[in-house]
Length: 250
Length: 270
Image 1 (cartoon, rainbow over the protein chains, first blue to last red):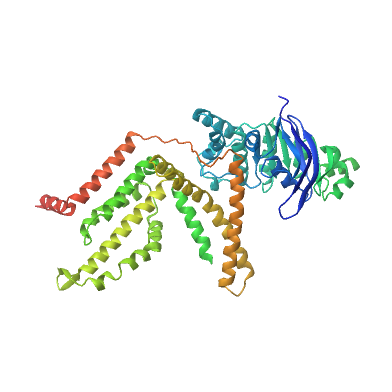
Image 2 (spheres, each protein chain N blue to C red; image 1 turned 180 degrees about the vertical axis):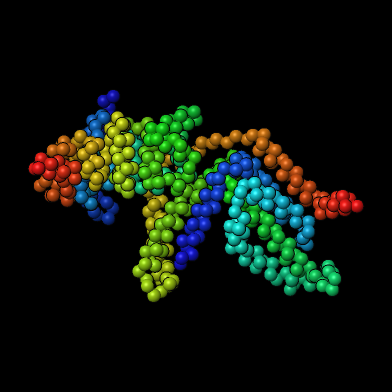
């Protein structure tokens, strides 16, 4: 399956209020790749994700997912291919019970009821939350909410997972479980985050955004070792890499 | 403003109760909903001066609360909170209706007092029954039941979203209230201007959240109609529950149960 390609060409976006958020972004992500998108606040991460999810359409340039070029008409098709995990699970989980929420996507794709139930249960099992299926969302911990919101997306069997800050507000153990979970998925993944250590563990490739442009695009480990590049873009070397250097110095 | 915290926690407590596991909690939500609705209609259908004939109906809420192991004090407190509504509706009856209907020894009781008492009894019965329904049935269960009983989709969806987000929104409000309280040392309550600002801010935040939720729904295939997956099973036990209680209410309504009970007791002791 080589058609799960995300191809951005010279994408520009200007918000209605005049803020130029993206000014010429091009990259290509091939099937099965995991790509981290990092950058300082206001660098354009969220805007970029909203573009890929089809919420905002580029003011110039083009986005291609597989063979389909993103436009108003193709948004629906594209959303079937992309599983978008929002930053706040309280936005993502909107049905009154966990099971109903996970079943929402498949149900609205028009699957048969048996298929819906099966895929919802399978997705819950994948994130180890099957026992929570009858709970109302407000009785879940933050880590559980995050897992459920991921389940609600993978239940639709998307080709590409797009995640906005998946590790925010998680305690260390939940964060660790999340990383292990995401590592078991073989979808193409796009992960926007400030958690550089997580990006380092999950993504071979990273794109650094700065002021609406691609400041760097390359192997994660190499980019994150380049202290000058990181500092220019308001970032810091991930702790795990700093620690390594200390150990060598000893 | 500490009361806001406790109101929030009370809401959570009522919700927690509904997830317990007792005989009553396990009954199909449709059966409980129907029984409660019939109960309320029957209680309301009594004539204006009905007083003693309402008393047997206390059997239902008391039995339900007992079997469902509900904390009675907590429910009574909830009843007390809403009671002013009923009291104010009936408070003028004794002044308007001064016709003497009953002589108790040297006391004359007017029709107004009787209808007032009847109103209060009905209030306790109906609101109590509704509270018990909520405390014994999870809210998604009730929504599911409403949907299956062909209540218009739009209302059911509204209720579902209400339930899902009332906790999120109250928590957000709680955070705002706490943040304000921490920085206003002398004043216990916000002035009207501050209050309006806070409500406005909350409204804006809610609007933003609604937009994000809409996006989340769209990205999962929402097309203007919400479908739900329903899994309810109406068993023989539910049918029994439904028919027994409805028969019981019919008996309470159309026969003078007090008199029958009274005669029975007299016969036993004769």
